Structures are given as C-alpha cells and as structure tokens.
Amino acid sequence: SLQITSQSVSGMRNVAIAEAHKDVQCVRDGRFAGLREVLAFVFTRDPADLKVAVERRRPHVTARQLLTARIETGVVKYEARFFYDILYSAVKSLRLDVPETLAGEIRIASGGISKTTITPQPDDVPEGYVAWNLSGDSEFLGARQFVLSWERSTQELEVGKSTDYVLPNLRPMNVDRAWGQIVVSKAETLDIRAAEGFDGLRPIDPQHDLMPGVSVADAARAFEFHDAWNLSITTTRYELEEVKRTSIERALVRMVVTRSERVSVQALYRIRSAVQRLAVTLPGESEFDNDPLYINGEPKSLEHGEQNQLFIPLVNQNPETPFVLELRYTVPGDHRQLDLPTFPGQEGLQTDPAIQKVELSVYLPNEMALLDAKGPWTNQQGDWYSKLNRLPGHQLSDEHLLRWVTEGVGMQSQHATTFAVDGRLYSFTTLQPAPPPNGSLRLVAWDARALNLVVFSGMALVGLVFVRRSAQSKLIALAIIMIGLVIVGVFAPTFAMQMIDGYLILAIVVVLVGWAVAGVVQRATRAESTPTAPEASEPATVETPTEGQSPFEADDENPEQSETGTNEGGASDA
Image (tube, rainbow, N blue to C red):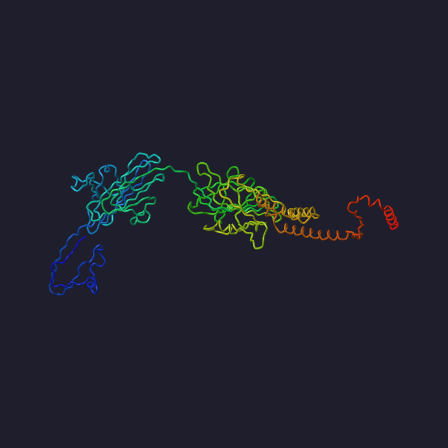
C-alpha cells in the first residue's frame, strides 16, 4: 500500500535487487512475508546518505455485481451479490446507492457487514436513491463480497395474461470500475422476455457467459452491463398440461408358441421414466422364470401388487437416460390370442405411459402354416412371401431387432440374447397398441401337411372332372382357378400366399400331365373303334321326257321294258 521513491543518494550506487542478494545474505531471512523489496543500493566505507519519500497509494476499487431475479406467480425474489477487489490501500467503508422504495426491504445476508444511511446525503445521489455506507469489523482490503436480498409481492397473473416487472438498479459508488450481470429465472408456468426499450445491456448466454465462479442452474435470460442501464421483463402466464412421465421408445416382444399349449414370452422395452416405481400388468395365469426382471442386463427384484399387477423399482434411474427393461414369463394358451404386457397409469402419479413402436416376433411350430392374422398389427418385412414360404436365401432371425431395441444403452450383460426360440418366425409391428383384448394379435394356423393334402385333393378333383372335356374347357377351368387365387389374395393375402407355393405348382403340373396322357389314350381308342366305309355303286339312269311329252307317258309306252328291267333286276339279286 506504500510507494517509495528515492529523493537524494550520496555515496551509494543503485543496483538490481537480484544483484544485491547475490553475495550478501538478507538480514530479513524469511521474516515479514508481507513486504517486498523495491530499491537496492551498494556502498563502501565512504560516508553514504540516502533520502526516500514514502507515499501511501490511493486504493483501486473494482466492483462486480450479479443481480438475480426469480419471477414466480405473485412474488419476485431478488438477490444482489457484490464482489469487490480492493488493491493497494484499505478502505473503511463502501458506498452503495439503492432505490428509495427498496431501502426498507433490503436485507444484508452476509455476516460481519452493517449498513448505515449517510447523513447528510451526498450531493451526487441520483433522484429517488438513498446512499448507504457498508462497513465491517475491519477495513476492506483485497477480495470481499456480500449479498443483499429482498422480495416484492405482485398481483397473481391470470392464465394467458402478461405484465411487466421493472428490475431495480443498485449502484456501487466511489469505485474505479463497476460492471455486472443480470440473471432472470422463472417458474415453469411463466414465459419471460425483455420488454422493448431496454438500454445499456447486452444479452448473454446464462449457461456459458456468466462471470467466473458464478452459476445459476435455472436461468432463463441473462444480460451484461458496464454503465447505467434500465430493464423491464414482460411475463406471461400459461397453464401446464399433464405430460407423460414414462415413455416407451422401442419395444420387442418375442413369443414362442409350443406344442404343449404354452407360450414362452420375452419382452424387451427401451424406456425413459421419471417415476420411482413403474407398474406393469401381465396376462392372466402368467408364470415367471427364475429371474423374471432384468434392467440393462442386470437382475432386479419385482414388487407384487394386487390383481396380478407388478411394480418395477426405478429408484436409481436417471430420467434423461434410457434403460432396457426385460421381462420373461410363460402363459397358458396358443396362437389364437397373443396378449402383451401392459403398463397402466398410476393414480395421482402418472397417466398411461407413451408407447411408440412395438415389434412382435411370433414363433410357430414348423408343422403349422399361418393362414391369417387378425388385430391391429401389420407385417414389417418386405419379404413377407419369402418368410412364409421359406425361399432360398431368406434368413429367419430377429437379431437385428435385438440390436435395435438395445441401441445406445450400456448393457451390462448379453442376457437378452439367451432367450431360447424354436419354430418358424413371423414378424409383426404396430404403433401405440391398445391393451388386451383390443390390442391382441390373433393368428389362424393349420397343419401344413393337411393343407398340402387339401391342395392336392382339390386339384385332383378338378383334373378328374375335366379329364373328358375339351381343351378349351380345361383352359377355362385353369383360368378360373387363377382368378380365384387372385381374389383370395386381395381379401386374404396371408392365406393366398400360403397356397401359392411349390406344392400348388406341383399339383397343377400333375393335373396337366394327367390331362395330356388321358387325351392321348382317348385318341387311340377312337381310332381303333371306327369301321371301314363301303364302295359307292353306279347311279341308275333316269330317262328324261322329251319336250312337250308328259313325264307319265314315257313310262306308259314301254311297260314291257319296265317289267323286263324289273325281272332282270330281281334275277340279278337272286
């Protein structure tokens, strides 16, 4: 805090401080740590004289201010934090000018600081302000800070209405530099913005641009100032709507229909939830495996409730981080109705969770043929025909769905891949499925061998009925069959695609070969049974009457000749 300058030097020579310590030990020897060397001289045996002038340095005061305003319905809470950096010399007190309307409401929240109103008021006090002196147990030197707080009651806003709040300006005085920042936070039902006409302020990012050592977690707006400023905040109230506290982003349910009329189920859900206990309801008569519940591949314990309702503990789950929930159980039944687990709402806690896309993989025994699927479900794969008829090159697997539902989640184990499956895979998908029975999948399946027998029998019957018909009739019959398959494909595509396979083509080929063989046999039989035609006799001569003669006269003139001819003819026959 002192400044020393040499006025007169006699018999001495000014040197650097480092040179003075080079060969001579310092008599201070580590004492007086608060002092620092500023001048150094060397002298000999000759008389020496030194005169110095000592002056106390003027204090250099820098003031930073962080004004925080939290706007709530019916009240505005203020907090002003001041950070002072006092260099060179100490000061006994600090002057702060505050609005006169707030002088009786402001409280000093920092210990060891007292306030007094300056009497009489200085001449430079702005109109509408009061000058305070802030003092402590000792003089202020170095870094010092203190906090002021107060509240202002306001009228409660109606939904959809707006109002303006004028933020107060507290002014540190007698400082070398003053600057600060304003941070505004709000209740979640309010929306805030700076009113038009604010001056002396620069908008900043409240999450990244605040002064060092300061953070306001729920800050909505922030400003910075370096001079006089004015600011009003326009506040609008809105009504909150209840939102889903649990979101099921992706789901994969795998069901294996066994020959013993039981269905083995694995249900995987990718979930974000803000509740501590998530309710789930399983189909009736469900039976659990040894470890029915896994979260991110780790086993967890289920909590049992009423009416087959279960609760999943989510105490340590971050609402912003998704997790994978896995359930395993078996339920009596078959393919005729497949019910999924449901996540009901919890009264007073949350409504029904939001469910996005759900994938359903159904495994039927190999001897079963799927004829129809009923319910609010559709097939996802474009190669549905290949899946139904097992064309070469088609891979029956849903491993890509396992990767899809666990994508981006840190799984602690590969337990989800250990679920045993068997049979032929059929895939379905839906969005936001309804609870059972409206959201259930109902399958119509029949024994594949019986279906093939029916196809062969039907084509054989057609072949027998039309075997003796003309080729045109046979072509018409085949055309009617093809048209019928097309019509069935429009109204029952799954059944039609089960029919149109290699067995149907083989049956048609057998019928065509049978018709061809029958046609050859029929032509050979007709050729053997047809008799040889007799030789044609010469035609009898017919006498033509002359012109003007009656046709009956010619016969009457030669009766003998006629009789002779008859006799001769009779003798010839004899």
